[in-house]
Image (cartoon, rainbow over all chains, first blue to last red; front, side, top):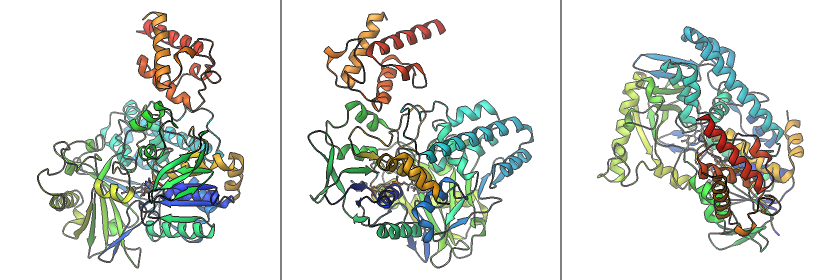
Length: 495
Length: 87
Ligand SMILES: Cc1cc2nc3c(=O)[nH]c(=O)nc-3n(C[C@H](O)[C@H](O)[C@H](O)COP(=O)(O)OP(=O)(O)OC[C@H]3O[C@@H](n4cnc5c(N)ncnc54)[C@H](O)[C@@H]3O)c2cc1C
């Protein structure tokens, strides 16, 4: 047998899984359908600018925090370094009616102080909110770094939404909008996102926010280098068509789209759960499980505008913008006319130097079906062809950005617009959503373990979206193979 | 719903969704041994019961302690009775 383990999909979760297993002496192949690894994380170049796509910034890179430990353990810091955002304002929240701006600072204490100064009458709500978020974050971190096998598969289900929680604390819509604004980072409206997932995501940014020098491209290059050093065989441009099981149901290998069969003892699948269902022969999963995976909700997709400026955009140096006309738009970020929805804006850099930024990318959340034919009303411009619709949408988005952020007026020209179709094409995701399967109140997402011996799952559907969420799922999937105690010891040893 | 109707609905939903032999659905049947479910199946079992009866039970301790099909019957009957008195 050529391989012990095969990892399906070379996104952040697949590259992490392959590297962890190879570091423990397994013979591993990483199989990716796209012609190169990390298609979602890679950057693209237009007019001298490097635009990042699926990675801009992350929390949890502070010393000893989860991502910092994972990166150390994987040896990624040998080739990349993190760059802190502005400690006094890494995320700038702004709306026009009422005119309001808030800059999120690093650290819970600083955030508390700033919130109290801005909302003096909301002490109790602010304290309760921050205490609950901090507690959930600490508890999750503890369980992440223990790598314990789930004792209880019914865990991980959460019946409280962010909206319900905020409504129980305060009636101040500006404060609630501010605390909901990060929903663009997981693509689920406050009404539907479990408080626990929200806390896991924002709880990490509240500590600190970092980018990676050289952007997503250098992260992919760092992974590639480590994967090669660890002896992982990388097979790109080769999709998996079928997972093969023996008569007793145990995993025996995979068949690729070109027909070749690769034998292996086990597999970690990082593809979208609905894609996985197409790879697994009927009868191996129970029909209830198939039904559950089929019914999983999808996170939002979006229109993404990529724009360039001929003067430096200091405003975006070390900071992202969260823009909206009024606070209410943050409560229903995927409803109403799309050009009035909240906008997230983040810097783009010149190819040869990271600073200052000379452009940006901006996301406006939409449904994944947004530009499909016959999709509902206020979405796409039905009769035009795709190209024309794109051109027009880009202009409308640019107008809205300039309206909400006058500093950008007449300074930028747009270079590219990506739609859910674009995401579908580059990530082979079945729906074109930003973050794959959503984490949704009342929904039980799949765990890393499946009924098929040797088949484990990682990726956005499991523990959460984003670099942090998918790396957690990858380590946990690998812990099932390596042994939980062993992996814990190894990761904690790296300081 | 009578207790027998509740039991019948539990048995038929589980038998259908988990492709179990209806003959095996006896109260003393161990869910892990005889019915061959495993701890991974618990999530789906809870979802099937929630859908069949329109209540939420995922966070309850008692559902974590069931061992036989009869335990499930008792759990659901008690849950339904508790909901009826509460409303
Ligand atoms: C616009 C955008 C901005 C984002 N910004 C950030 C950010 O700033 N910070 C952050 O932390 N996160 C961000 N994210 C989220 C983050 O990029 C993702 O959560 C993460 O990269 C997902 O990794 P993954 O490995 O789970 O999935 P993917 O990267 O989707 O990996 C799955 C891989 O499987 C491959 N595949 C599919 N089918 C097959 C098959 N049959 N055979 C073989 N391979 C197959 C796909 O091509 C794909 O490469 C952003 C996402 C988007 C879309």
